Length: 482
Ligand SMILES: Cc1cc2nc3c(=O)[nH]c(=O)nc-3n(C[C@H](O)[C@H](O)[C@H](O)COP(=O)(O)OP(=O)(O)OC[C@H]3O[C@@H](n4cnc5c(N)ncnc54)[C@H](O)[C@@H]3O)c2cc1C
Image 1 (spheres, protein in one colour):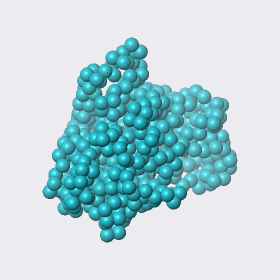
Image 2 (image 1 turned 180 degrees about the vertical axis):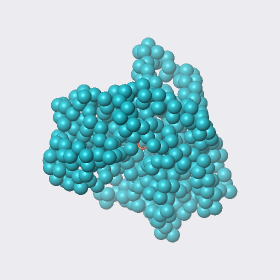
Image 3 (image 1 turned 135 degrees about the vertical axis):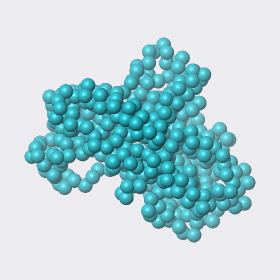
Image 4 (image 1 turned 90 degrees about the vertical axis):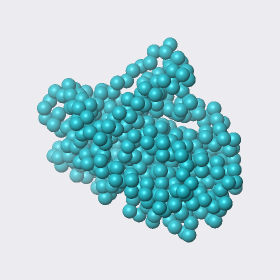
């Protein structure tokens, strides 16, 4: 029996593992369904992939790195992740190709079943399966008859040569905005299929001079830089939640100016102007997206020219008719709700998590759930943030999770779960506060919401408020058995 099992090896899983190591807890196992460890930044190797939060903040605290760009590219973050795995000798704790299918609470421990039939037991189960880990391709009529190649941006096929090929990219969100400029000069023609235009703001990227990199990565300097970036980004919450005027002035107006400055055609500008308030969907940052769309070999298909169906040779569009294609790239996002926990979980009294979350996913501090003792969901319901680093939130959750882990491992508790009352009050607070945010009133549909339009991905406030809530373990909010 392991003390702890962690499902997933992205930043969520790694942060948990580092915290356990630091506490001297070494009998933990990390289960990873893929053939490699590292999560998002190992998996997403598409051209142009890069982080959109400044790298000194989008990194684990206490683990500075001599980043080469202010917004690091995928390969550098992947290298950083591998460095962390090596530094903490995590490979010996990681089991690859281990797809968790089911977890069941058996009186005093979790019993875990993998897809290959293997089983494991542990006292504490940490779920870090990542909400943006399971890609989605909408059901298009005739896709199976298409003779060309097609793949999702999350699963980039590096063996498919795009040089001089007729390519379509379906989607115009965060991944598409990075891929399009990266491939436009290579392909013969690029058809961009846009359902909804997104707000795009300039990307203040900076190649960090070689001689400065190590200096900026020294502990005191890195701490200072993180602090400055953190507080600048945190100010965005004022716009997202408290002041539409400020949101308009500091975000929507600069985005409109960016569009006007970079797009000369009035018709194209109109096609690219969102009809929702900025921030409602994730704000995209790019200096190269709009210029790429105006290249001679690029064709934009907007919502009036959507995909009718696929044919053997390409796509039949509503207005453009049939377009012949060699390759179709789906930049169509993720199943953020189902992959929050990507396997069956059965708690006390046979209660199924899918039933408990029938209406919408909910958890105390977005992390723990009544009747699911010793079970913690990293990047769980309403822990997302649109304004700062996801790693800050993951590390905030760790403050709460590790207090529970310590109590259980030290023998002070056999099991810990939040009370139904505490979870209900927390969830009530979250959704009441949510009504004040642009994610709720901004006039868009996004992956932040479930099918009923309830915002289940975001935390409605400052990230320091979330951290404060996580820091102090409240005994009266928990049911503890000894
Ligand atoms: C393309 C892309 C760009 C992003 N850019 C940013 C950004 O700029 N800023 C930001 O803050 N956030 C960004 N994010 C969000 C990003 O997901 C988080 O920042 C962070 O990496 C999440 O880490 P995680 O460990 O929770 O999830 P992941 O990194 O997704 O790791 C989850 C792991 O769990 C594994 N897993 C899932 N199900 C199972 C199972 N049943 N059994 C075993 N293993 C399983 C997966 O294979 C995966 O390795 C981005 C996400 C994507 C996809």
